[in-house]
Length: 558
Image (cartoon, rainbow, N blue to C red; front, side):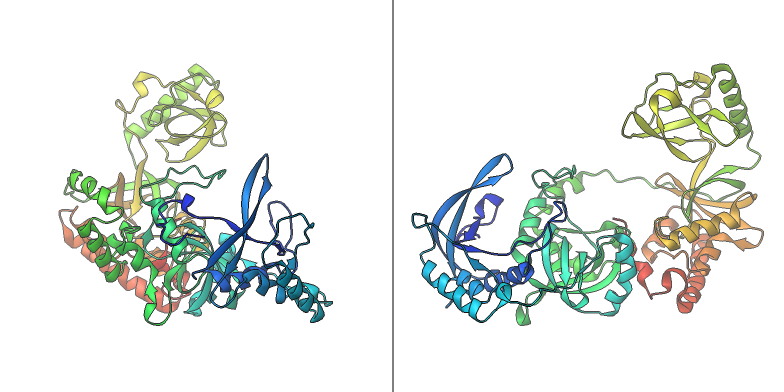
């Protein structure tokens, strides 16, 4: 309960009050293996309808010390009056959703204890709720927390267009656990296109993310505005992590408003920059963010200075190169590593690492494992263990590190003690650069390997390209990855993936961004036109990512 006149600027302002002299059925706890007691959810829902979002009068009757693990908590017990109802507890008891707690004569009790006993007597006579002689039956509710179940169910939620939901839990200002009564399921939902700052983790939580500025304020705004309230959503897609995304509306009638728009306008969330770059973010959200930035509210009151102080990155205009290549590693349907065919340095490195293995054996030696350091890492390609040049990517658990084999492109997580050793100075990348080049198919986006269409895209690329000498038109470099068009004779592999509905073309803003990085812009313009023509055919045929309509445009990573 938030006391009247108090500003909800920290959690200590909230007061916890239990209803005096009644016992309500307990909601279960899966982690503790405790199931729901009969009528627990009905009691909770009725209490929510009676009190949430309403002005109440509280009269504290007594206090008790409640055991909480090794500690105790002093809990206040009182009577809540809402409107013409003098005691919310009496309503629950009279409807058979709670029972009166028996007290000894000397115990402190509710001031309306006699009314509670009389209400229970009436409920027993009418055999209501917990006093009913009929077997209690409550159907199970489908929980779509599993990403696979969420993705399977997403199509029906999108076809339903508008759905009523009840917010059961707030993770942050823009992520919720929600009950959809009409669909009989729980979902994790987030308003589309938004990025919300991370709040302070709950006490005892395993979440290790550091709280971000205005993360707590954003979460408090959500708790005060939507928690335990009925809202309206329209589902537009599902993320790889199983989060349903779409629009969310709060309030009714003239008070009905777009929650995402409200959050962005208050500076408590930002519009995902990737969605802006792709041209997918709605204009009203962008306008709301620009207004919040102009007024320096919320996150923009502190971040504006950082944005203004950023040094613009220089963009080098590249000249297209055409080379013959062979793929050495496929990361996804559009992301891969290749070697230039006939590269003398590749043969020299391979031969040198064979000599290195022969001279040093296969025992690990202590070495520097700072991220970015290039070392020798042990790998077995099926012909036996051998040393290969590798870059430390990050530290893992239990004395292991993740490494990238820079001459082939594959990654592995290996034990430090047995699978690493220092590299000879003559084999450093300052002497011989990495042989494997990281690349992406230009203007061609595919889903991750965790999704069926993403796996199919990678398998198709493997079938089209693996073991073959291909022609790569290298257009430019973006974020360390070469942007290329792969062709096998007259067959354009970028176009082939798009035509099969396993890849999509980015929005105009991305195409224009690539154009600014290449000297001959007509090449990219022609490629974009060919890919879009193939995409329209795939979209019209409802194949691949287009089988449920335009859901492919809503792809996003968790």
